[in-house]
Image 1 (cartoon, rainbow, N blue to C red):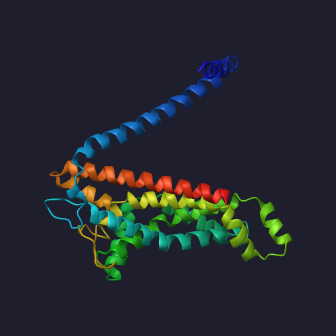
Image 2: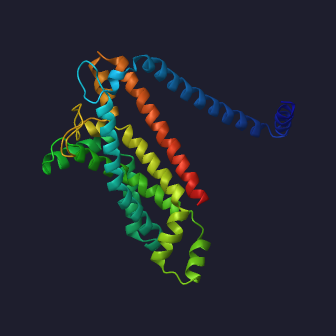
Image 3: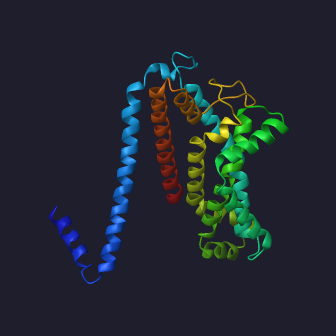
Length: 287
């Protein structure tokens, strides 16, 4: 404790001759404190409002108007997330490989692709939902279905995965590539055996962000996947996710407590995804 006090005093004494640095340090500490306080308040508020309504009926296999089960929505969330990532990850990562490893620098096509990706990442999710409604649901005749929702979400997260993967690939030192070329490996072998494993944690971080956006998405899925509260027999049937389930309960105004309970489960799912991804990132770094 005494050592900690001495280190703190020593650190603050160093700012005596630099008042501007002291002000900036105070602003940074204040911003960190405000952010941490806000997060704790939100998490605590959700837990206080939602935990009392958690009961075995909420985890029943079949949804009814009496138990308001969220288990079908949880299964649909996992299915939707897996399908969307299965579609978006290969396209996004391979596009990033082309932009970072094969495309010539200063190429107009590359600049256009990057500008388009940045533009698409700023479009509101409800616009993606309307596009999915017009294209997948109406034009292709898929109706409200898990597949239509997954394809819409895949388009929505594609720019995020592509940009984060490209930045991760560019952060790999050129010495890795030069060493591989010096040993006689070709470009393709270098990319898949050297560059991609080294950029794995950064690519995984982008996938984590994309997963969080999928799990919390509501507007785009209402127009594409629908709000049917059951586990669909196939991906061509309608089904609601946890976020849509929470929205539907809160929108009705009759089961606000159960909506907060769903928010608690959704919060636990997101935290679990982040912990698992952090564990995988550490394993990749050690490997």
